[in-house]
Image (cartoon, rainbow, N blue to C red):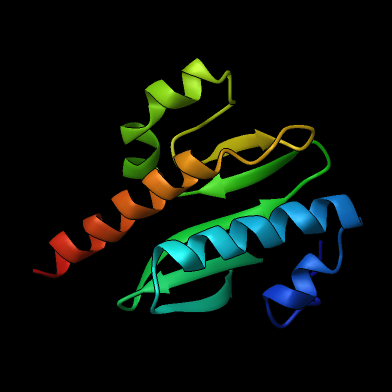
Length: 122
């Protein structure tokens, strides 16, 4: 997919309305968890920076929403992913498109990443 979008709003508008709603929900939850975020497009997907460092990314796909909290973010929540039967890799987890976004889990992951960034800056 060629990068034809300039911001997260344009990215989200490329998807069917049902997927748009999930992506908007995910965006809102991330912002609610961390107040002073910078939005940008990174690796051709919506991304968020906290204190100048990448916090998380997400992306829409045909059958899932990809959520990218980095290697430590995945490693720390691997047990949760296994319990929910989510596919995951070294730096990403897949939330099935036909299921609700696990908001409580997303909140915990974002908080973990926020604290990780704070600790590295200290």
